[in-house]
Length: 254
Ligand code: G
Ligand code: G
Ligand code: MN
Ligand code: NA
Image (cartoon, rainbow, N blue to C red; front, side, top):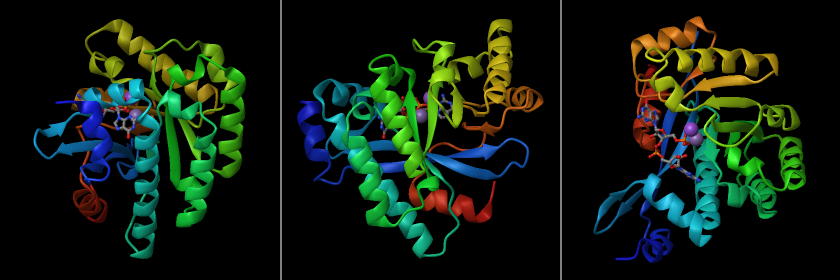
């Protein structure tokens, strides 16, 4: 079977679903945000992981359609939470480099925010270092336009790509997300604990918030709290959840 062809049909067949993984304030231990993560339930083959289909979508260019679908789906969800008077938090959305480097990302954000009547501050775009290495002028313009609109921007998977520290200076990110590969060994490898604590001070020094990703263990959480990490995302609090389960968790708390 052909994943690429099926992916194009998946939108019409309603096979995509957005899951939400909480981000937790390290001090208050309250949910203060969530990351939207796409899931694909193929009618015949069951769940296909984004780790598998996102790269194919990126190669084929279909990632722009997927990104647009996810963005609008999240806007609609935010609108619905507000309309029904449910508790909700700002949502982060992953944007692929290819999509971020296109002009229509600005149109998408502008028109969706207006169409759904969303507070732009309740949306954060997660981009990776790969988005920054080319066309720095395009990136600069896109980022400042998006900031004028009022959405937040975070740098995802930090430390795994090709970015240099000067990019933290050139581009004004609201949040830096430390990649889970560092967190994984934060208690096992001296290098990873040094990198993690240094990244936290570096980000704070530059006025950014820090999120640690992939936190699974109590001891990792302790280390991150002691080193002043702002937010925690990981299985220790919750896996990515379907809307209904995420709503329940927001209502009852952690
Ligand atoms: O949720 P999970 O860990 O399986 O995701 C695997 C990868 O797929 C991660 O790198 C994640 O950023 C990416 N991913 C998940 N959902 C989306 C999405 O909606 N858009 C993009 N571009 N990437 C996504
Ligand atoms: O690349 P990005 O950071 O967008 O992708 C986040 C991915 O990490 C999601 O696919 C999510 O399912 C996964 N994830 C989130 N928390 C944990 C965790 O605690 N452990 C592991 N192994 N994966 C996690
Ligand atoms: Mn992400
Ligand atoms: Na990440």
